[in-house]
Image (cartoon, rainbow, N blue to C red; front, side):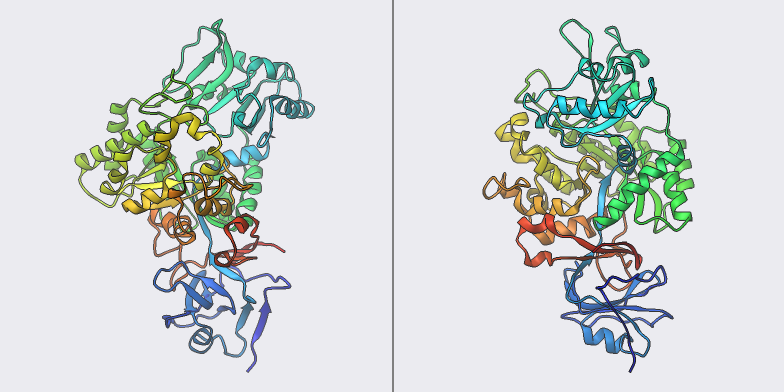
Length: 570
């Protein structure tokens, strides 16, 4: 017998779209299908299938981008053709294999723009932010716009927002706007405000706020899209080529982190870039693009028709509505005032009656609804609207979602289950926010914050993601947050609000099969089973055998989408 053997190391180029997977589950016989013309067998691995009935396998085989057999080694070799002469075999040498991650909430377009803008993530003071703007000025002509993002005032000694004068001091001749890490506030300099015709007499736009100082002058701080867009609309639109350059950088990072599917909320122009990449065979992750809830119904239906809803690599999906802000900027809509600023309850960006009417209309047209809701008031209104939609249009398999669901009033958890609303959450937000979240909302309300375990115990379906680029795309940071609820450097001991920890298995499910369910793709991806896409990753360590403190150090050795290698590490 002659078997063509390829070892994982040294690395090899794994087969492309025609690759075939056939394997069998460790404890159970797998169902084998007729072997196609070209099958690739992956053997001698520790394969975590994420299938609760049969969680482990030793080998599998892929054909035409799907898994055709999976299970015990001898079953795959003998019953699925892995031992036949000329069979192409990739020996995994005991490496840990699992389904690729499906990030249920990203902003690829924003991440692409950030990749080409001033990087402010991690700056620890206004002065450091100013230095980065100075560097940008040196590479821009006078009058050209300078944009940046990622600053987080909670990392600064005085924990205050910056102002226009601090930007004027380093960039007097360039309009500048720098967006907060949350994406819900930004600071602009005087020239940018002038171009936007914002002065002391400019009223707050509906759903937004222009911050003013004691003399009534704008400080440069703009809260929520309604206010930030007054400036942003003055910035020349990037070309398709510029968008593509940023998106290609971002997609390479996505693949490097083991993410094989993305649920994205970006501009239609970004979707056109994805279409280009797909047509050229260069798309490296499956993308479902959300449309913007505020667009007219006719426009939404046109985009749904243009983008399609069935392509396994690229399609349109739900409608996204941003109904409030963020905790860090105190713009998340709360039922009661903020504990550290009793003058505000945040910003609710819609008239609830108008939101309800729009939701009923769009649901009737067959759209899935995704509402961004962070504060407990925003979550309650979202649930009220979903209940009104059910009453108006009758029951169907909607799978409506609340994006973030960060702070939920105790009596509202059960409503998620009753209304079959999916909680689309981002575990790494908790790791970032725990430094100041209790200061914002106090010890009682914090019990309903980032409450993954309460959601699970209540019977609520979870879908996990990162909110990239608000948080890094790495799902391993999310796994660490789920299991430990500790800071990246460790602590507090036993975790912050430890009753909300969940198991590694539950966290992986939420990041894979849970995310697939949230986009109507269960049975297609999220588990390594016969008939599902061959979207899987090879890791440097077995997640089930290392302490949680090591999760963020795990390296992705290989990422495959549809059996095609889209990333190969060392």
